[in-house]
Image (cartoon, rainbow, N blue to C red; front, top):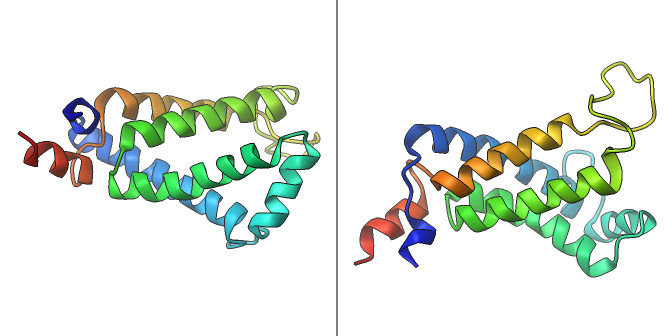
Amino acid sequence: MNALFQTDGGWAAFVLRIVLGVVFFAHGAQLGLGWFGGHSFRESVAQFGKMGMPTPVAALVILAQLLGGLGLLAGLLTRIVAFGIFVVMLGAIFLVHIKVGFFMNWYGQRQGEGFEYHLLAIAMAIALMIIGAGNFSLDAAISRSSP
């Protein structure tokens, strides 16, 4: 159990965790709470449903982003949360973004967005799965307090 909470990431992991946590909490709040110009949880689930995603999976995707973002900010269960974000981003690439191509739609010249952002999030998630939560995390506090 200690291997789940142990961290050797120091400041690098702290930076990765906080930035990924802010991004995913904000995106999850958009999808789940209607903040930042988003829609309600129900409307977001319905939008995912239009893409062919089953309702329980859509709900899990939204919760993974919202609660996962909070978990990363607190540094709690970081490896599990990072794995969830990895899966969500991989799904986003293959279900939505791969057909658009690699690059984001910086100039509005095509419909949709590429998957370069998703690859960055995947890389950050993999790094956190390997090195753990880093400094100022609940995982580190739990690891230090366990025998």
